[in-house]
Length: 192
Image (cartoon, rainbow, N blue to C red; front, side):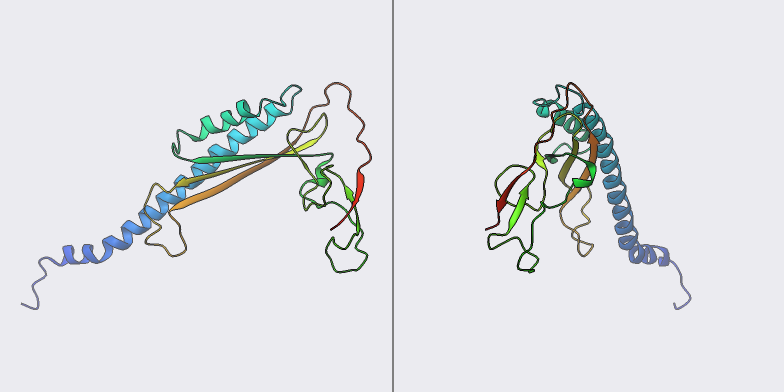
């Protein structure tokens, strides 16, 4: 009886199959997420190029539709969010508005003067203006996609969630159409 090896293969398979299936689902999930990222990145590059031409302002729904149309075949139930911020140069992207830190506490407060680069009357961590901007402006275009994972790996792999979120970002300079308006000197304000 001890030397009888019949049925050993099925027992070994039963022991290895869950790990093998989990690895396979994890690999397929990773491949799906990478494919979706590449589809999103290609679509956002195309939409961003189209938004740099004169007359693109006001066509944001149409340009965002290009990205949505590219992502929907891959993930039909995905939720997409779009954000555009315009800067006068590439180096300003994502930078806070300048301020004078009088009390040296690293925070814009207590009436300290600041340069209101985006003209909204308040000090901001991001000096960009919402929208397409004007001629020669650098526009940071961000698309965030949230979708449910196609493979149920969230219950088996610690730290994974049922939904997956990815973002694609590109920054392009608008074409020099028409006469470039001279960038006005930013107003100044006082921090609260």
